[in-house]
Image 1 (cartoon, one colour):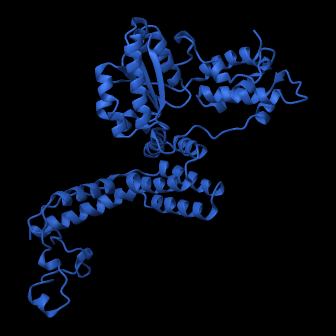
Image 2 (spheres, helix red, strand yellow):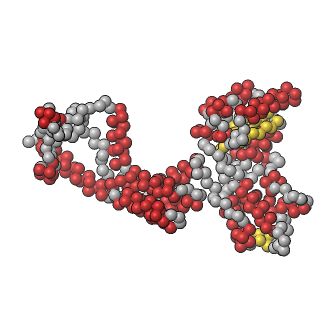
Image 3 (tube, one colour):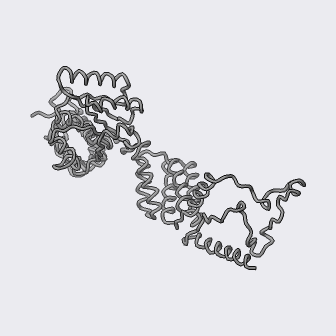
Length: 437
């Protein structure tokens, strides 16, 4: 068999290497290995509607095409990025012709199903229920949020995973033997390709295409490919990252939880992952400030100051210098004493007020700027705390009449809040003592 260099123009690797049967698929063993869900469905030749959820380049479209072959169905593919009601109607009409003229049912594959709005997704429902076609949707977004519940309830969701290093190596060897069997790649060169592929099979094949194109340039006599050649030949893309989707929020969640869990190395890892993926550092600065307020609070007020300073530093310096300030901030937040007492107190107070009736301000706490208001008792019997022992009016009440002390804010025994807890305990004792007099 000749190499791809023998063809004019050379066929795209992704097309040449597209699996023709399920056994050729690399990856997704949790679905395709013996006894696993899709293998059992293919073996039983029992089609069912499904949603394939996973990152780009893991085989969603390939599995949909192979499903049609395994189930002996006609295959219609539409892209939700480009399609609208017209294309949906045409697909339905084609499925009806397949049934009436050939007696064959159809698999309707909708790529990026999350791009369809509710009405477009609803248009599929009657035909899924009637059995006119078996629906297969592909999405990079969480179907729980992006697919209508009615359609979701009629489809089995399968989660596809990024390809592992070993699986990408297997794909590389298949591509090399097909496209460039006369070449040798040293281990560092292969590692570089696989690292830049970042779990994406399509990206790996595109990178190999770049190498192939570099080798086809005039005067290129290289037969042994090393890391330097790879680095020179590749146009490196940004790491795979979805700035608005689930992977984005998963990573910011991992950053936040690493800070909360007091692991500075993990916090730095997720911060750098997001910066490497193209996240706006200003967004990260805002989230870091939120972490300081939510998870550290008064246990170490310096954390809030440092987080704000890091945000201001980034605004002044920009990238990449300002990113160092963000890194220092997440390290400090990770090692700082932790308390969510203020955060919990605020949420509890807000929830109470939202569900409570409006209570009047007690007279002794009201302002009395005029003679009339004084005659009405505003400010009467108010005790000026600075004139009392310890600058504290022991036994005084500051809540609406009849409202019990809620004790929303309860400081923890860590950091500065340990001292705050001691102060509050002392003041509460003064309150108790004042009532016994």
